[in-house]
Length: 351
Image (tube, rainbow, N blue to C red; front, top):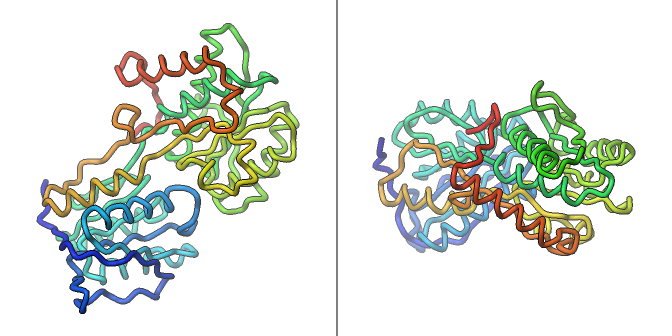
């Protein structure tokens, strides 16, 4: 269905508000009105999580430039901030409310039901309501490429993955990764092992949160001790611990997720970043803002795929020499097969 929720076009500088600190916008000398704004609510990982909070915010900043809307982020620092921040976003009077992550699903659904004339979008989670657009990504497609790549560059014959929590947006990466390793073994007659995840049982290694960097380092050190030399952490900030462990051990590389870790992580980790499995959340945000302004907003999920550019692999940057031209050619062939539908990457968590 289409919603008649419309933005104005007055350009106002972006701003960030801590929980409980953002008053409802009012018309002022600059001409900004509540109809010309969007409010984003982060999950408890915070705004600069080097993951989808950060990329969602970057997309809304791009939408400011393109559509002249005012964007503001309400930063949740703990679980107790989540529902109040969504309420505060609604109370702002803005035409579009963007929430990020599974932690905000209940609050988003509740407020969407109470405010049927507002447009909501939720990133990396599915909420079913007439005025909520889920923004999800078939990351298994790109992770399949990452698994094939990992199997192709490993020197030890052992790779690994782990997650922050056993949740569909996390395990979707892990499913694709281990299947990509399996495909490499099938094509090349090798026996590369993937530690940390059993797709058939949907069981594996998890740190239990997305913020404790030390947990990621300890878990990664255990994988390295078992011979793993390419590791995919799907754990937000916890993944920095994996990168820290890799820096301390020779010959170990990391595959980052969501954003290009080469650009978003501290520079000290660049020497161990093989690539990243990307979610192009930025463009999704720009598109959704445009839909609201054009009155074409609906609840049809945005699903990022290799075909529409919503997911992808980042460049190899400093480690490109580890990826021979033959392997790069194989990866491109797999990419095209997935896009053409000749190769279907399956997962219980496929959006």
